[in-house]
Length: 131
Image: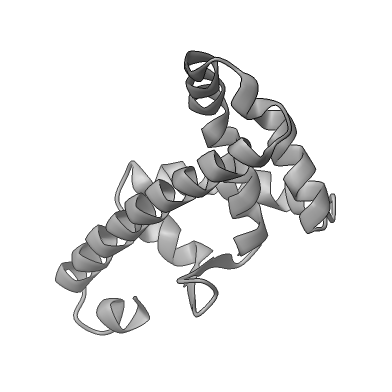
């Protein structure tokens, strides 16, 4: 992303915005799939009526997604591509609305959530409780 934004200005910045948004969409779909599989492993979840399972996932997936995303964020930015890339918070603020406005509250939440210092087991229990 940094190479695309580099010296050529707005056109490359717009291309970076499109790529970032596309990556967010793909990652969200993958994460929802993983959350669904995780929910199936929660004792008793599979015994619920299918409509109830869908409803619980439908209304809990965003909160669970943000709780999991917090572990990829710090005050300076966001790890992407399974930790092999980093997007700065300032770069995200420079993007067009609504994307720029959408990310800042996620950073504020992540800073507070990360201060809880949850380990993977704690996070799994937290996500299970959300679902």
